[in-house]
Image (cartoon, rainbow, N blue to C red; front, side):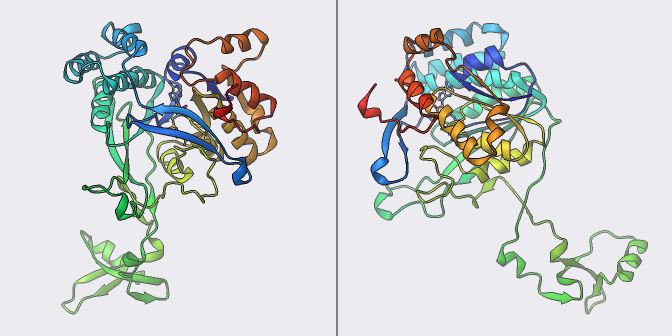
Length: 401
Ligand SMILES: C[S@@+](CC[C@H](N)C(=O)[O-])C[C@H]1O[C@@H](n2cnc3c(N)ncnc32)[C@H](O)[C@@H]1O
């Protein structure tokens, strides 16, 4: 299979182009319902080359899309919605009213139902969000996954920075410093590779004895047979306490490390100096994706990111020998991903990609120029400028067309 990059709305792409049960792992990092304004700053060589382009505003309004989405869920369009999803959205309509939060949850329900469909029976799903709506999103995900044999596995807390900011910027509450990643699987039988992290210096201090094999500490010998004890003694792995109780030598070099739990404090969000930074405001660190991809997939597996932004999932999948499918609604993302892949991997990398949704002839270019649903604005201009500069142009939103 060729890797696939789609330019378009992920709902349409999922429905039209992604087959049932064809994906091993899906990670998504959709725009949150956080009323944030994202200004994409494209950093070029020097400060003077900086230009801004507003890619999307992370707020939601009750509009025609929300009305249409609500109708599709309530009518069980294509038979893709569980009765629990239908009842949930119908109930939330009463509780929340037709407002921005409901519009956001409808948009997510539509898409998660498709993601569930395209996951293989052994597949996993990670939804990256924040506490603004994570409690509602968990209801949405429970209603899609659990009635169909899937299950909730973890709520991962990702502590983004070691220091949450100066005291000046902190309001009268605890600083918010964590994103939430909800992890679901399509069935009880799924791929999971345990991850171990390095022992901390504090933890290592317990290895306070040493012999010719290396550092060790004495641990309780839980249940053991006479035979096993004899074997351990012959291997010089036993020491006795003063009271004569046998204890086993636990060697530092034989430990795998500390098993990673659901609270991730060792990955920093990208700062302005980070080498991998591409100037995309919501860019996630590669190590974060590396962890998710390694835990929930094997080499050759297919990874989907339906909100792929500047392509962190795509780039890490490529590096870890996975196949990938990326979808984004803005041409700037597509362009940035092509450039990122070209800069990070060998020249042939672009020939292994099937590019979809990008104008390939005059008719489709005209269609893009005349597109009514230009939510992300000036897509035709961005496509034209970026394409004819081999993805090297800097898009300056202020100058318009
Ligand atoms: C938070 S960013 C993802 C950032 C990404 N994880 C990274 O590391 O670069 C969300 C992305 O979703 C895209 N997006 C928003 N709505 C979309 C839709 N309906 N279909 C496809 N992409 C969409 C936006 O253009 C944006 O690039």
